[in-house]
Length: 283
Image (cartoon, rainbow, N blue to C red; front, side, top):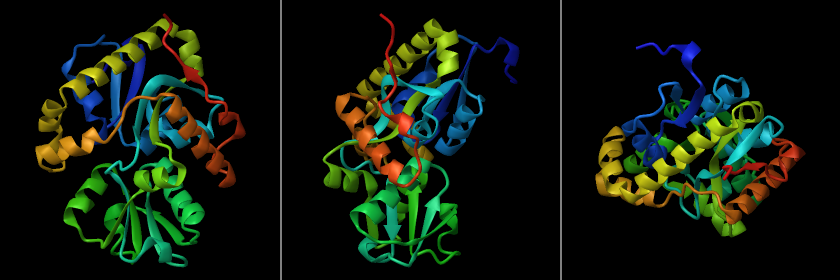
């Protein structure tokens, strides 16, 4: 059934990887105002849509906020993040990652945050200078890539296949080197939309938090729905989703700030990204 776009009050972006399942699956089970349109896409597509006013709010790469901080506010207490291993953002390599200088690394185009993170890990932490190419994960062998960045469901499948000798969890490497969690995605709203619709944004914000809380409380049930999409075992899905965090407290503010400072060095974020612009629910 085609939505009546004239009747839509809010266009909400949701990442369709299973890492959002504790929010996403609960959202789909609940009844919402029919004027709220949920748009499901991969992170890079949602970044583009928010930047081009094709959605009003939703989960986007942290990098997207850093690129256009003048356009967005970050909704408080929502993220896709990890304090250590994340389990679905990997550099898969045929040789030791510390030896990749001059060799080819294929970067998934689906998340610019993860692309920037792998560059920080390789260039800042490991002090190597690979040759980067962009493309689909499935093209890595055909393009003779020595290593490949894979995220989300692609990473989960490659991990299960075990075809690469080295599997570097980028969330874990970040935590080791910075002693901070890593925030892969934030829930951002366009400033103009929030200014024009403050009560509506608060209502959607509350619903996202309620869905998250219910999803984490009933995580095993969520996994029974999400796991077959990979496919993976339910207990493996539960272990994976248990390692992902969906809040955004002070320590994660600090982590975002550190990430953006690295991005300044790569000319991948604007200085106006700091201090962070966090939008809280009005009491």
